Amino acid sequence: MDPIVIIGSGLAGYTVAREFRKLEPAASLVVVSRDEASSYSKPMLSNALAAGKGAAQIANATAAQMAEQLKARVLAGAEAASIDTAGRVLQLGGDAIRYSKLVLALGADPISVPIDGDAAADVLQVNDLAGYARFRAAIEGRKRIALLGAGLIGCEFANDLAAAGYGVEVIDPAPRPLGRLLPEVAATRVRAALEAVGVRWHFGTAASAVSRTASGLRIALANGDEIEADVVLSAIGLRPRTQLAQRAGLKTSRGIVTDRFLQTSAPEVYALGDCAEVEGRVLPFVMPIMQAARALARTLAGAPTPVIYPAMPVVVKTPAMPAVVCPPPAMAGAWRVIEDAAGVEALYEEEAGRLTGFALVGAACVRKNALANALQPD
Amino acid sequence: MKTWQCVVCGFIYDEAKGLPEDGIQAGTRWEDIPADWSCPDCGVAKADFEMVEAVAA
Image (cartoon, rainbow over all chains, first blue to last red; front, side, top):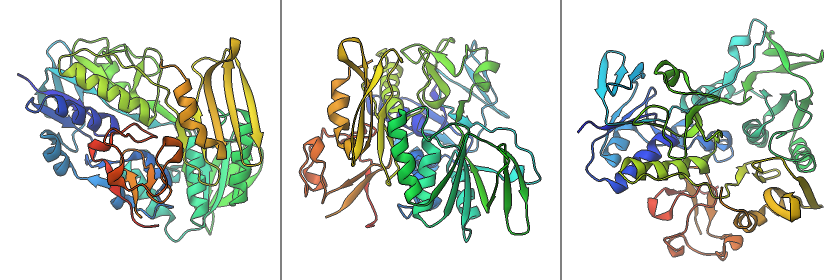
């Protein structure tokens, strides 16, 4: 029989492979990766400085080690060119692989906004281990970092860099950090705590140009301000990688459209992780990926299994003011806030006091499990 | 006392602190945590051997 082929060696791809292997010790398995296919924890990239880790220490297994562990062929440096869904063939440049089932674990691309200036091309992004290695090399011996984006990744980087002694300026068009995740009262705490460790905020504006100066870079903001920095890092958000699926005629929307079984619109082709839109939702976080990988592994092993999401709190790793958020699936209620000097507990309630989400900041984070258990699986 | 780090999500388990909110007392050694325990941040099972000994901070 033709192998099961997984495209992608990130958390989604390797976790499906690992979970599948537990169920099917002998079935033929191929993992295709466009990068070097080492296994690493992507969430660690935005708090590795504090953990004393460089890019080399973040990788926990090479492609060869993963191949041995998974009893799979791991094809590193192989870009998937096209999929023939009728003939069940994956084209990799010159090579072609026939598959019995194909899993798209393609990930997402960082969103970049158009920026003018002679140093616009020097704006860095960290979306994988290689990007992180470039970023670490760029900040070595430098002091001032400008961050574009005050979302989850931007705030984690800001905290990590400030704690390591860097001067950090964060620019975001929103009025406060973590605007899409936290209610205002909770976001204000994170803002103040990061300010206290040295982060300087520039809200309500965006970078319009980055240019070279004698001593570094100058970032011109839309509001007329200027910031001097040595390195600019963009952490604005992610866009699911859908190009390959589109070329193959698969249905896509924001992500590659799947049902609860992670099945795409093409037979024997599945998608999960940052590239997938599962029943209308794109959930680029660790916990949903783990849930999806386990369900898909069972499906691939012959027992069709829908993904069921338990309450999945998202942890914002900002040690200066830790936060946890379980975003409500629909904004049909209101936040009820309990706060004291040590933290904020914000409960999102619909009619009749039914809890549908929560956000915790500071000392209130210890309530994470109790509240997660109070939420219904979705 | 040691610290252990989840290789999937970076969660750190510190034996000295335990996870009182998870019912794990301060001072609980890694080997004494039940096999059905899972990482509170990402759900990875203890049995998956995906925690590694973290470098002492």
